[in-house]
Every structure is written in structure tokens, then in C-alpha cells.
Length: 189
Image (cartoon, rainbow, N blue to C red; front, side):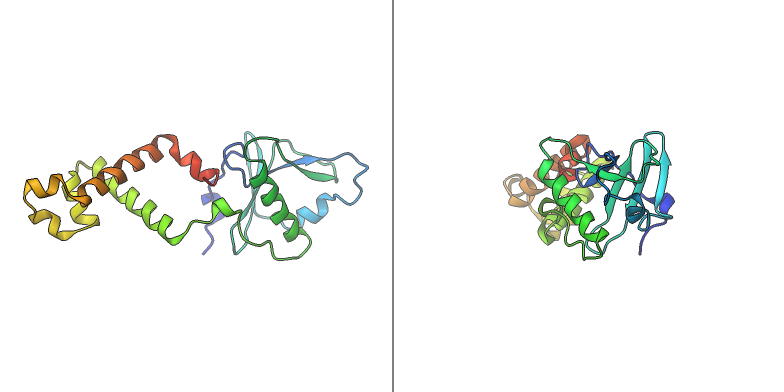
């Protein structure tokens, strides 16, 4: 189920390389027409102080577009900065172009597709972080996430257990994500 437009989160394109920056092109690009893009966009845009944001849904993952300045120029292109995320930005532009010409957009760029194992680990990290922020001990987190037997282990076994080490890593990685590491996820890394 797609969330309503007002509930969508709009990310800054410099932090989200799959977000495309729309820009006017020189008039010599006759076939780069705004009307082709506009046909996909009605009702899926939101105006913010930094410009207009668009979200175009796609089964494999949405297209996020940003126009920093309102343009009435009918010739439109995608601005792709020459930065460390150039390849991901090009892949995102290719997906959007395929959508514009009526083809299947295809999957999100490779770094953006999480494996089932990555998703499970991220969920475990969030649960471990929630527990730790609520005051839970590493042992209680292990009890909830990993091994119900951990509650009955003697202190000596607990201190040298793989479960304790695993929970400590989960919590440390979760705190790193919370303190800005999530930006790596946004970049597909």
C-alpha cells in the first residue's frame, strides 16, 4: 500500500543519489520535453522551501525527483553531479528514462537492493538499539533477540559467549547508524 503524498519522506538529493535533479536544458534539445515528464507527475509532488519534490511510484522502487527552481521551460533534463555517487545517479537516471519511454524501469541500483540477511540484521540492530535506549542490559537484549537460554547462563559463560559479543556488535552498529551512519545506507553502501 502506497502512503499518502503528505506522509512521504523527501530526502535531499546530495544525500540520496537515486534522487534525480531536474534542470532546464538548452532549447536545442528539442525532444527533451517537460510534457513527457509531466504526464507521470500530477498529484505526486510537494512544494518545499528548497524547490519541488516529485515521487513517481514503481514496483521495484520509486523514482524521486527534485526541481530546485520552478521552470516553465518545456525542455527538461537531469543534472548529474560528477561526485562519488556518479554511477548510482546514472543508474537512477537510466531507470527513470526507461519509465519515460514506457518500458519497465527495472530494479533499483545494486547498492540499494538489500538482501534478506541485510534486512534481518538492520531489524535486529533497531530492536537492539530500542532496547538499549530503554535501559535494557546486553543480556536482556540477547534474551529477547537471540537465545532464551541466555537468562539462565552463569555470569562466566555469559561474559565469554558469542551471544554477548553479537549483541554488543549489534548495539554498537545501531548507535553508529543513529549517529549519521544511516547516510551510508542512503548512498547504497
